[in-house]
Figure 1 (cartoon, rainbow, N blue to C red):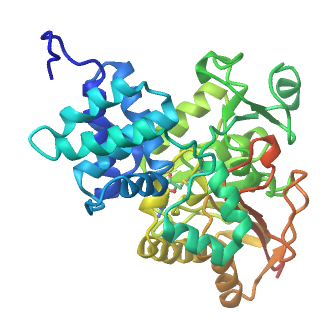
Figure 2 (cartoon, helix red, strand yellow):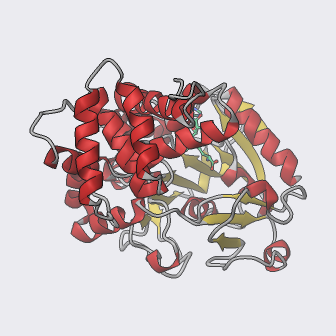
Length: 420
Ligand SMILES: C[S@@+](CC[C@H](N)C(=O)[O-])C[C@H]1O[C@@H](n2cnc3c(N)ncnc32)[C@H](O)[C@@H]1O
């Protein structure tokens, strides 16, 4: 779009791409990573800006909608372009500090030939009035309702505070020596460092040498439950390999299995970079059979991923009840198969990065009622501030370790098979 002097309007292509990304996420249920393909071909800075605008919008849609609805009598449909353009402009103001003139100049061309006057009027009115700062943005109603019923008001309030903040970067280390000598960040758990403002990951010390990898502290908990003396361990849904690397670094003999060839290729790249070795298998848990049983199986099952909402706010819109139900059905089948691959007396560790009890607690309850040969093993206190649940599993919720930067939502349980 040329500006009045004939040059291209700076940043307009990024806003168009952001609009396409939001459309793919909200209307077609895509992940941000897939939706970001909409910015393919743009210069790097524009593509990054498009993703940032889409992300900032997804973090605060309910509050942005209240502002928009308070500034017009017109009922804008939820998926109308006018509403989306207004959401994007307000999100840039609140989340990126974009100057007002740039907001208006890049918003209006997006609705050319459409509700331009309406968008101009609403945006102008809101900007003139002065925007409130929204420190703890509301989560989508359906999510708040679900989480309130499952975890209570305090967790919903903590989730609101968490979604507006940039999470710190957690690193997992291959050895205690490497962790001790890293020289940056605080260590909240063994083999862990937390960095507040990391910048580019590849620029951190030792990236090339591969002594560490990026892994949310919550995601590092399941591998910490695998008994030290387990010799051969199957990582049954392994890619891209965060937990495989922990297991190999801990000295286990690891088979890393995943049904996705491309994700397993990323796992192999990660192993190469870190100099760690594991056997890799491209296969589907639902139709693969091992030649022998394992001392331990880690099943980090595919899930709604709602626990990762701080970095991936789109999960809150993708995880509709029917998706959660489908996921729970698949998890039950995966658990059932993986359970047969554990030797008598061995361990099965189940994990999901989900805040939905249907994918965590309910899966274990159903599993234990169907499999009398398994019992829950109480998890030790892995990280101070993450209390073990009285039932023995570990449930990580928004609000935990909040002062230190919080964690992803997570569930993990250690099941042990009878010895006979
Ligand atoms: C939550 S991710 C695993 C993350 C990984 N454990 C880590 O720490 O980096 C779930 C993985 O399960 C894989 N997966 C999903 N269904 C599967 C199946 N039926 N058989 C094997 N792998 C499956 C997906 O390809 C995905 O890589």
